[in-house]
Image 1 (cartoon, rainbow over the protein chains, first blue to last red):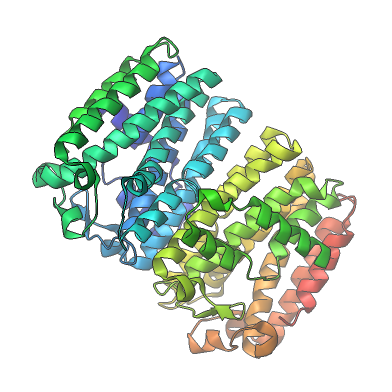
Image 2 (cartoon, each protein chain N blue to C red):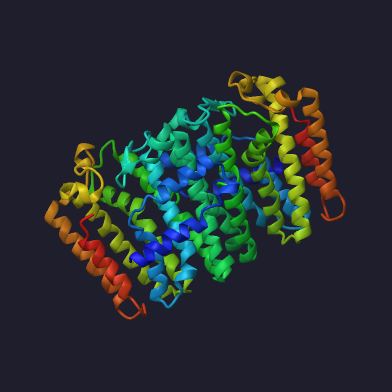
Length: 291
Length: 291
């Protein structure tokens, strides 16, 4: 995983636009959040999905970098004063605290737009068929767009007035966090020319670990170690945010994480995916993480 | 032009996501700005460029709608308090004045992301070759991204500390406004499988009318009719924004508009573009407009 993390970090350096072409203030703000570290879970999933079908790591890299750009843009915009108004992220001051709101908005816009350039490089540099790459573009626009991540974020903002049901919370988790994880897996599959059956297996895997990941986040916010997390715990409680533990209790939430992880493993372990080992490891890592 | 305006408006209705899938608050905010009217110059250019090469209007429509979504998102974000802090746009309250800042940020993000979905429909619905559509995606991400429109906007924000040269102003105009116009023309060309020579001619045409259009905006802000413009004039003066007339005077600015229009017409009038008439009319329209 560290090897892939380094590959992705180097890839991000390569795929973000060169300094000569971009105002330095904008580039600096984009780089600040993109290079702030983080777990790089989504790029890892893109690459692991491609490799699980015998695809090449290099061909998956442009898409892996793209999904990290989209994830990073979403964090920058979510942290803005008008949104969640967060001062720290990954243990560092948030983008707008360092560069100001205008730059943070533009850095987010720039990363989101440039992500599609990065996707296109899968065909330009690594000969992924144009049909596959275009399908990845289309799916990114759905899973990250109004029906996907942006829709989830909008529902989350509305929910601050009061989430009244577990279904509503599930909708937010599904779209705000889950969709980009599902995208990562399917896009990795498409780089390796996955069959429809394989795409479905990757989708079920992604949908399950995505929700498990988010419930785990809720649990960690409640009982995690602040130092390891790099952020304050109990922020959900402080913000009056309802979470899985709020609705179904801590133990039941943990059981749900276990159930979803089992479901995820079954989806890709049945023989449809030739080399599922790395993906299975990631599922375990997500289930057992403490930060 | 009215016919195409109606076609684009109907297309936008069709291409924005259905209500069932998107939180209503988000959809309402996206629609508000997208349907606020405007001149629809960029979609018109996409369609006119495609038709100038014998391409079909229908096949160009998804890309035409995409460029209007990108243009609209850029206006929503530019109007935000942290950016230009504008209360009115096209004679109506700006997005954040109606829906709040968080919704305006998300509506912009949603429109930008969904634009790439709309582009992909050129292949999905109208059988434009995937290679062409992917080239359009890639070019959109460059012309609207950090090297393009977002870069221009970042330079414009920096410039509020003081623009000291015409070159600096030209950089802002080129990227903030010009790039999306050049994109529109080339993308329309690509829908109709333009040759490299034709793409170059469309680029020169777009680059010239793009700058002319922006100088014309500067002129209209200085001496235009507020009622026709739907916004206050002399806002540049009030905001201490430097403009073309500021650097080279009003008459010289007008002469520059004429010179650029002539250059634009020569680029596409020499026989490279089979049916340049509509494009030539648009150039005249832009030169002679009073709002």
